[in-house]
Image 1 (spheres, rainbow, N blue to C red):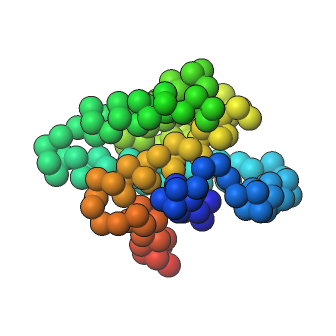
Image 2 (image 1 turned 60 degrees about the horizontal axis):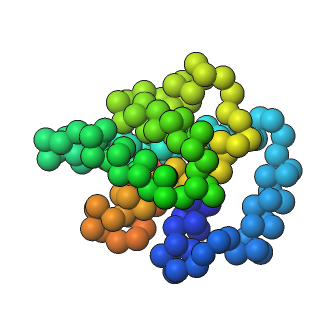
Amino acid sequence: MVIDSRLKAVYDGKSGTDPEHQRMVDQITASFGPAQAEALIEGACTLVYVFMNWLRQAFEHQDEDVIEHAVPSLVSTMRMMPRTFNPEVIPTMAGLLVAAGTGLSPNLWRAQYGSWTKEEMNPLEATAVLLAEYINRISGQGNDFATKLVTDALNQLD
């Protein structure tokens, strides 16, 4: 839901975060204990994995490599967003994308380098948003295609 609301704000041309929405998100996350915070991080990593898996399959269908096409584009976008992506976190986010793009769990990939840091939380969320927007753009299926991918995947689990 957070990724979807961020995308809608981008598509509506809103800059920044709606203060009311941010207060709600802050209130919810402040109530999280360690287990809930870890689950939220795992959820973001799972979204990155799902999105990169879809991209990998889409690029393979065209006999192209997802790492070659998607990762440089996303990293370039990250570099244009210095308030969200400090230069120090871009290699971590690029590694996350490469891991997911090669079929490796982002959670397992990250575990070898230690716990996520507070400074990486916003870039992690933004990486998932950038992936969703990238999928929406290249799919040609509308501004909510990435959200539908996730919804469809969740419905298949039921």
